[in-house]
Amino acid sequence: MSRPLIFVSYRHGPHWTMLADALNLKLSAIADGKGFDVFLDSEQIRAGHDWKAAVDDALARCTHFVALLCDEYWVKSNQCLRELFEAVKRFEESGKTEPRLLFVLAAEMKPELLKLDSARQRGALLSNDPQLKALGDINFLGPFDNTYRLESLAWNKGKRLDKQLMQLIERLLASGGFDGR
Amino acid sequence: MPAKILQNRKVEGGAQHAGPRNFYISWVQAAPGGDRHGPPACAGLFRLKLSALQEDRRKRPIRSVVTSAPGQQQAGALVVSGGDSDWTDFIALLTSSYALANADGSGELAQVLNLIEQAGDGAANARAVWAAEIEPCFARDFTIAGHKLGQLHFCHWLTEDKELIATTPPKARERDVYEAVARLLEHEPAGCGLCKD
Image (cartoon, rainbow over all chains, first blue to last red):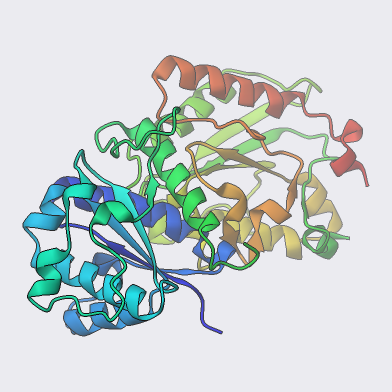
């Protein structure tokens, strides 16, 4: 049986790439110990490889889809939306079993206002059993503060970011689909 | 006996060694996404504090304190695993980047674990391996040289459940390293349950 595959979806840009790299680093360090694989486009796709095919293959196989959400992810990146919609499509078609949709608040935003209606109307999302109306319908991985309120990743505060990433990974591992969990 | 050290999931040494102590402090530069400043600062602080001492609590002289050179592990130039290496205490400053640098078996800790596994009784007992987490990371889930660190009994796990944070303000970092160095020097193999058997 193949190992769980965590797909990290993020908006390319100085802050978001750094956050994705930091998350990928902590995940990759324990990937063998915990028995899973990680897909981050900048790490897994080498020069000369078919970039789109590699992403599509990972999207089709991933068991956990982790999106670092920010307004730019939603508004400015067709590639991010393509990855997100592909993951949502698989999620709905599988009866909400796979991949696990796991969102991370990478910046201050209102996910409940990010609705999927227009994507369904224009055919970007087709499902006989639509499960999601807005991204706010998905449980967030975090990060959460001490009072369990969702907060955004502290990309400019190294120590706090480290703690947030630890929390995210602990919640990710507890989300199911990994050996022994 | 030496071959059983890792089979017993036990990483230790130094119990019967009475000569000088030579410390080797192993660290790696951060991979993308990691803290670039913490590991070299932490290694430098370990070196400074150990170099300032003449001897440990058991009156063993401290002869040398060496750290990895920047980029050394990534470049594959290792100085700890050769037959002419005379380190007695290997200190691994664990970070996620450190785990990745050692994942394929070519890093310093990977080679040290292999060395201990292959060493004869005398060599094994003359060497001690210490582990210190210097950033929030899942160090016990790191897999190095085929061994999951959490399943090895480092009697010398310098940080236990407490993080030794290299990214903390310098004063806190200095205090944490000082405490770790004190544990390095106070450890008494004869009285340690993990070292004795």
